[in-house]
Image (cartoon, rainbow, N blue to C red; front, side, top):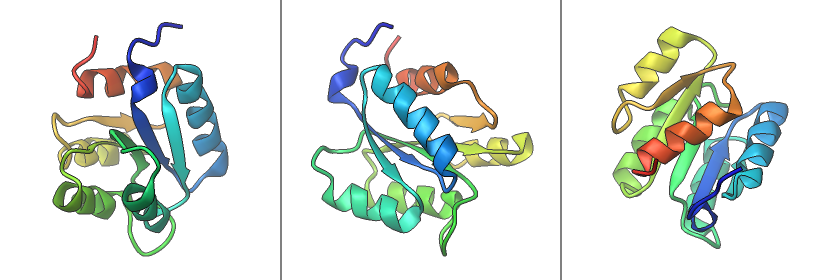
Length: 129
């Protein structure tokens, strides 16, 4: 698998479902990305504020456990970490489309998604091929 300049990119994967989070995180690592995992928005905020490497992109589920959902986390990121790009995902296409409206260039994914589709979204968002 081709991985140009991806080793320097850090992706934060935020998903309350450990299986989904683990599968996509493992795939992203296999593609050469650094990956940080978070179970909920609180963990994501902590990772963004204290990560060893600066986070470039967040892949975040809309339906997160806890007091903050993916929409709210996306808004927090835009206000506090505007340099970080966000891709929201949701189990319902209509929700995923609404999520895309909150993000730059409208990136969104409807679950279930193919891991390669996630990488394509990240590459396009970061201006890659």
